[in-house]
Length: 133
Image 1 (cartoon, rainbow, N blue to C red):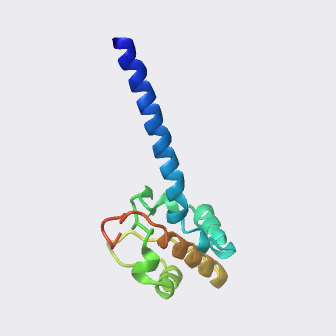
Image 2 (image 1 turned 90 degrees about the horizontal axis):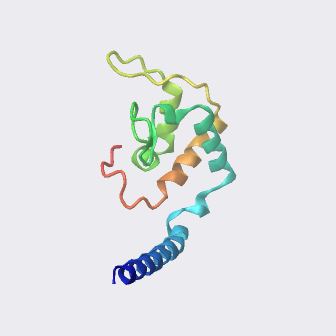
């Protein structure tokens, strides 16, 4: 009897695993925002990685929590604000953590904005729950 329960449970959970795997693969194209993955967005991701932005910021909940979440910064602030903010750093505001000046060119800032636009378009199932990051 115990053997039948074991084999039946094993088969059931294996089939459940296959069904959930199939469902996940059907869902991925609806959520990945692949249409916005332009060469400019890819270049922006490279800037994100080479400048170690994830060392201070989080992106869709992944990374450090020293500085604000940037997964929805494009939606919250827009490209002009992001560009101006990056060019104005460090602000020198007393008592606040300061972001270093990376001396990015206008093209690099546009690429970074394209990357943020791509990330903002990903279906994250309403994450982060706080719109302000």
